[in-house]
Image (cartoon, rainbow, N blue to C red; front, side):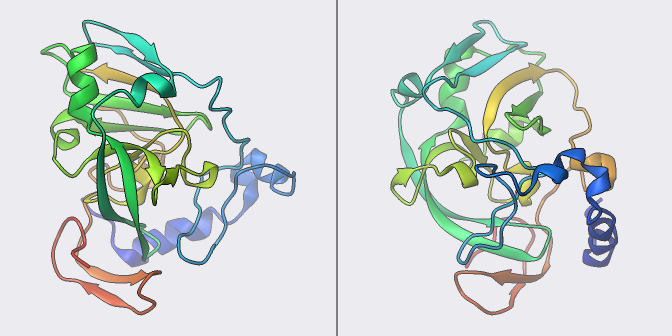
Length: 227
């Protein structure tokens, strides 16, 4: 079931106390990635953490696949590159648009070859965040793994070195700072789903405040916003 806005705000209120996240006590430490209402595109993480060193970073892919392996950024950039302009929609009722560059999930799936019994992908991030997404959703032609934003390397604050862009799902499914992917046969409970968020996370009709437009808009259809 999708989450209504008033239900979300109740849950959000419960998270304002940093006691739920011990690492919030480090929010003042320099060089930590943390939430910020930056003009044009807000920054959201579930806890503060240090940026990833891209030169040492590797994307590990395993689980139910025939050719598990790890990739550095140079290897990922050899995959067929695609770009698209799409909007990230947050359950906080704001959204922001950018041009993304990277590769389609099916491109890397063709390399590691998921097994027939694999139906979901488990995504794990450098800050210990995690999610589960059906493979059928990842094969949608609007989904991509992105390492560029607005024709520049993806910034740390928006998920470098690699993030998922799935524009018909709310932002918490657009996993950032990815370090590991595992093919699994069954879904699990993503991090925010433990606290009442929709496990499906398809964007629903309702109000939105696009930061690039600067006024309230009405989402008239389910799925990816068309503005």
